[in-house]
Picture (cartoon, rainbow, N blue to C red):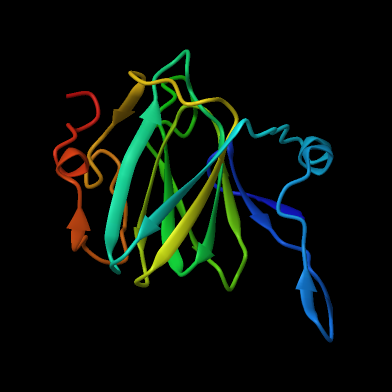
Length: 176
């Protein structure tokens, strides 16, 4: 695995380092020791799957309220997404800034998103599956969200959403 910093401290792109031969390839998706050695200690407690039927399905922007903030590793196992993290940590030098990466089954890339970030994605292909590994168990009542097109963030989505839940479409602007 290779770890690449983004413009936001606490958000890291994780690249696969596959071994290939005549059978195909093999790569580790997560290794606690490798993550810790790279300065990103992460041990998942829960794994979830998001199935998305249509291209341009938008999910987000979600986060868990402190003290239940989560660290998550997001990876696409089928299809492709444009994945986004927004820094909601008021004391951060990158407060309200966003970073994004294309994650796909083909490129094998993952995004490690630290606590205090809002997260969302838009599918770039139909039939896209997104795998989440999360460092804590889900606890109902702590989920929050902010509007995907809040001007305070200025996220440059690659396409407008065609499918979006009412909840995600009606989240308030940050600070509203």
